[in-house]
Length: 293
Ligand SMILES: [Fe+2]
Image (tube, rainbow, N blue to C red):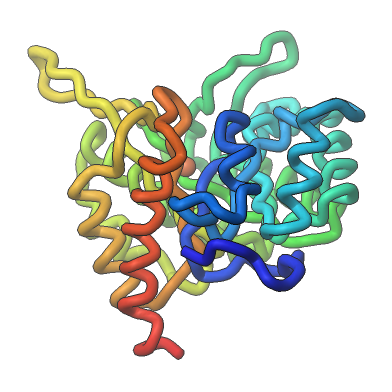
């Protein structure tokens, strides 16, 4: 990884390089030009953590934004809620985008509440024609308000609805076609979903058009063993698993480098450990850069 960014960050596109999720305990290391672990090519930010007007969080983020491209990964729009996305979350996201000009903005193929309650979880959607109409309308609202294309992330699922009209990849394909949005391809989520619900990660990835993919997520997951079989839990609390690495290596070799994030949100490791994971992704990206130059 480069130790020091020598030019102003590109605010219009993420580089096809490895980034890390921005955590307060790593602020100082990221800004330290002499840090032996180096500096990521870009960082992903959960914008909900910065929905305040000022204070130390914004001072840190401003300093980092002067050095590195940002990707805003929202967890709060609740695009699949039956009563529509959460308006105040969209306004706050729009204001933060105006302030920091992130290179990318994304949220999830999920819902997190209804007219009465909000939940911390990213809950699964029924993949029906009615939900496609509704979800596409919400993505349109976000893209219109932000004046830019957004990415939608494939979820990690623990159940599927009996009345689905289509599978997840078909839903994503039609969503991309209808709205012009892109895909945030989370490879660990594919491992978790296919492990829990059936199917294979290879078949899932074969149904993905690489031109949709604006960013990739890699993360670790937990496994619980039950009488009914293993349950895979997307906890982002460990290194990226071997299966996800193999799928990632194959995808990049087939389709070329894409901006890639190491997600590690629980049991967050020290900076050197996180950067070692990012360096592993970066080496795969570099190995395949010449074939797609
Ligand atoms: Fe993810």
